[in-house]
Length: 469
Image 1 (tube, helix red, strand yellow):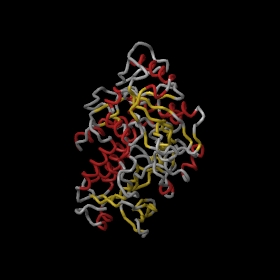
Image 2: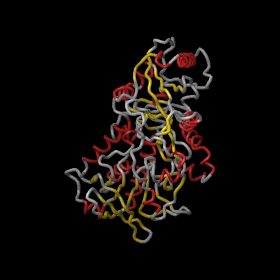
Image 3: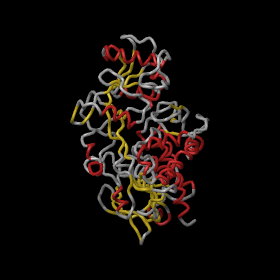
Image 4: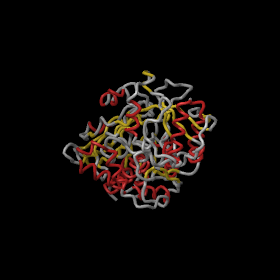
């Protein structure tokens, strides 16, 4: 739907840019284009804008910032370490992308906070991070929703911006080797064309269970997902020569809620990593089994080393346990989960005797009485020390879920889409989960929103420079 003050689509088609996808990458690109006085036509295939970005609940990474002022060279190192074995191939290219991501993180958070007025004043340490650097707001709104709605509202106030929802891109148009627009169809099925340079920000393929996910990761068949079922869009770009990278690298997030009211649903709601970052622990058969601040990949592997408790969907029964201190630190998240029936406030006795012993051991480590046998060293806001059967906790059942696809079309540090051999495709840029090479084998929590802002803004700036003044 276009805003009342939007320019006619025919004018935009002649003189502006086309952005495909209304998640944070697309909105960041559009914001950057409009800041350069470039008209933007944004196409979104869903009925509502925001993509998966609007669901993001842990936050956005950045360092140094006004809320995390310490210089943070470890961010680059942590990202390389998290990428794992993937770094062995195309090493220099990956290092450049990661350097761009981490070195631009301070400016990305500053842009959101200082330019757009978004509250990101709370900072937490998530799994795989050496230091706290994941920002979220102090209010009730999750960070993804806060960022997306703020940017979208600002864009809709511009006469240079037009948004069309329920419109699916069916083809990328070319004149010779140069991208010159897109073919798309909206609800009535009629195909239309828009002409201009294109920024692709249409997301990943984690919800494409019967298509691209089945093609590249058939071993994940039967896993639930946090993504709505929809086809991946990378084939639209490979059809014009785009190179793919890391398509088999799919992140299975260790904690998606199993809804007690509908435990067999294949679509799960994410249990935000910030819950563990603020001090939560995990129990399997009443026992802790890993440092909860390990990477998503390592925690998932530790869970799936055990037999699943359900095969349709394929899921496990893991208890996420929080105390009152963690509740206070992540109150807005937990209140929402309790309201949805995904968590409940109860007593430790509800978890059984073995869980009581495990939680007591965890509390002793958190208070400094003993070293943690699983080598966890940061316990954040866990405050419960005198653990007893009557002690109050918040619990939810979680399971690994297909969450994020690290693979996609190859881009360079200018967000230009590349062919085999590294040749750029003129008139085409990409940002966000549709791309590959930034995260390698495992994405750090908080880096998806960061990737969207960093490379979305780069794509917008590069595209604006490509257009004639």
